[in-house]
Length: 492
Image 1 (cartoon, rainbow, N blue to C red):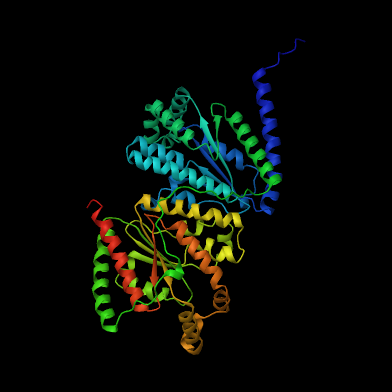
Image 2 (cartoon, rainbow, N blue to C red):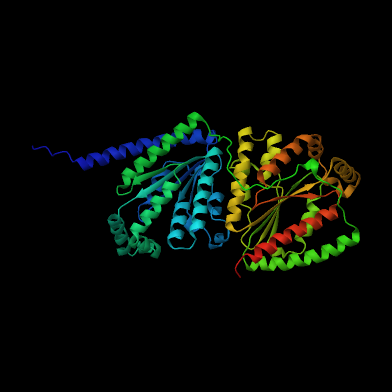
C-alpha cells in the first residue's frame, strides 16, 4: 500500500496545538502562585478591527479560574464616562493584587481614533501619550505586571474577514461604521498605531503578534504571558526607584515661618461670609454650564478646622453638583490596588465639585511616618502625585490644595475642649493624641510635601486657622478667585 506523504501544514497545526495545551497547563498552575503572592497582572490587547482580539482573550482565559480574572471592554463603558479624565475608565478597572485583568482594547485605540478624527488637538494628543507613559510606569513601579499585545493583520486579510462577517446575518452587526472607516483608511491608521507604539514602548514594551494565524498568535501570547509571570514570581514584585521630573514649582514657606495671628471680628466675618457665599453660588452655575471640574483638597492638623471650613464652601453649592469625600484608612479592596486607585474612582464629572477631606497626600505623610509603605514608595510618590495632578489639570480641572494650619497650643486647647464637651467627644481619638506626639516629624514631612508638590497648576495654600473665621474667609476668596479666572478662560 502506498504511504501518504506527510502534510506540513497539518504537522505545524498539530505542533501549535500541543504547545498551546502545554502553555495553558503552565498558566493554570501559575494562578495559584500569583494569587498567593498577590501579583496583579494587567494584559492590554490592542489591534486591528477583525484581527481576533476577543478570540485571543478567550484563548488566554480558557484554563484560568474565573475567580482569578476579569475582562474589561472599554466600548461597553457608559457614555457618561466621557465627562471624566481620559484615563479614568482604565485606571478604575485595574486589577487587585493576585488577579489578572484583560483589556479588550484600551488607551491606544482611544488615543489614535480621536487623534485621526481630530476630536482632540495635537497638544491634547501629546498630553495623552505622556499620561499613558506615566500611568504604565506608575503601575509597574507599584508592582504590577503589565503586558501589551498588538494583533496585526494586513489590509487584505482585514477586508476578507470583514466581508465574511457582513455576509452572515448573524454576524454582520459586528462590523461597525468605525471598522469600515478603519478599513478604508488602513494606511492612516497604521501610521497612527506605529507612532503611538513607538512613543509608549520605553517603560512597557509592545509585543506585535501575527494575527493572520490565530493559533500562532495564541501560542505567542501565551508564551509571553507565562514567561513574564514566571519571571515576576521568581524576582518578586517590582518596586520602582524615586526619580525627579522638572515641574513648575511654587516657592512655599516652612510652616514655622507662617504668621498665625490674622483674625476677623464677628461682624467682619458675617458680612464677608454672606457676600462670598453668594458669589460662590453664582459661580457654581457657570462652572456647571461650562463643564469645568473643580477639585478642592483639604489637609491639615487634627482639630485645625477642616470640617467647618468645608461646610462653608459647600453651603452655597447646589447639592446635586458636589460631593464631599472623607478619606479614612484604606479598605482591604483599596489596599489591594495601586494607591491612587481609590482617588481615581472618586473624581468628579466635568461641571461638578469634589471636596476631598484628606487626600492622596497621605502617602507622603501618615503612610511615610507610620511605615505603611517603603521609603522608595513615598519618595517616588512626590513625582507620581505631580503627574496625577497634571493629568487632572490637562483634563481641565481646577485643582486647589489647602493646608489648614494651627500651632500646637491651639491644637491642645481644642483637644481639651472636645474631651470636655460630651457632644464633641466623638471627634477626639487616641490616634489624634498619638499624632500630636509626632508633631515635629509631621511638620518636617509637611514642609517637604509643600516644597515638592506645590505646582503652578495645582498650588498649595497655607490657611492660617488659629482663628477659624479668618481661615474660612481666606479659603472662600481663594476658591472664588480661581473659579473666576477659569470661567473667564473657557469658551461659553
